[in-house]
Length: 477
Image (tube, rainbow, N blue to C red; front, side, top):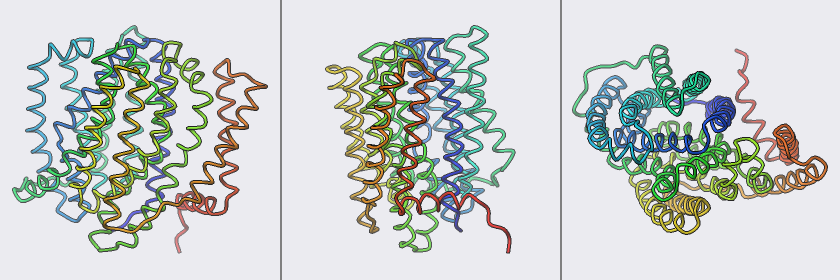
């Protein structure tokens, strides 16, 4: 069985682009209405929720996706995974309620009860998304993601306008997860059957190696925020996490591509089609970095304006951190693609090794650098640990397949970014970015220049137009 990687990736990217456009506007609204301290409370709630969701999953969602895409009976695999997750979720919920006092004190609000509900609904959504991806319906998950985000943002905005504080953001998360999951399950119900011991054993066998990568990705993503919450203030958490989310926009295409890589790699590996996997990895690198490279140049010039003008003066404290975080998206994007390929090749143990090293390094560096350099130290620690994780994953993947980085295409992206930066500097001398409309106009001009210069290079033009052409349905013969 095969799916169109370009079409699935671009459909996911389109949905994520729409989602992030809405989220970006909503985030700016939330930041201006609530301030950095209240935003920090919500971000710590999200960080705790994400880590606890991983503890209630322990790699089972990815294991389910792998087993279904590899040809095992979907009904019993889904049922077995759900049964295992219910047990884990019960233990995590008990722990949250048992330690709700210290947890509430750390977050900065009485949210432990809502945290249990958020973990439960998020896990239902994760299970649903894993079923879709395992069934090679990766493109369809775009609709679920978009609906969830729209419901979340719409609910939160409405409640804030009614005078609700940080709870408005929490309720938005709950409504988005619950209603989007319900819609997805009605749209494509998995063929449930009685859980089987052999399927549970198979899931556990894969998950025990995928445990560390699954937990590691989330913990790695939230380590800096969690440690900032320990040593600094909620306001610092709010400023840093806003910078992190602005930087995260640059990895939209990489994330979309990586979601398509795992199930397709798994399907091709089952048929021993190694050559197709090699081509897939090599051809995925440039699109994954296409938005990140120019963004490094852009934030180096505009970071204080982006954070200060759009979100408020409190958030400008994270300007230098934003530049470092965007640079760190290059190793993160490559790590996403290569890591998903290793998982598709049924090598979660190797991803686990790389994750352990990078995660340990991330924790140690964050503790050391945050206490010394604040938010900039957190950004440097996270970027360096992502780089180490990427190097290890690339090394492991090359033990199984031969692939090379498309250096010429990447070099041209750097050239195009340099041209873009020069134009942005020239525009700012004539039109200083003192207001949001002027900032948006400057960004639009820079993006247009970058796109034009990229398309002037024939190999890149051919690659990108190939992606676009795959979106256009071909007429029936």
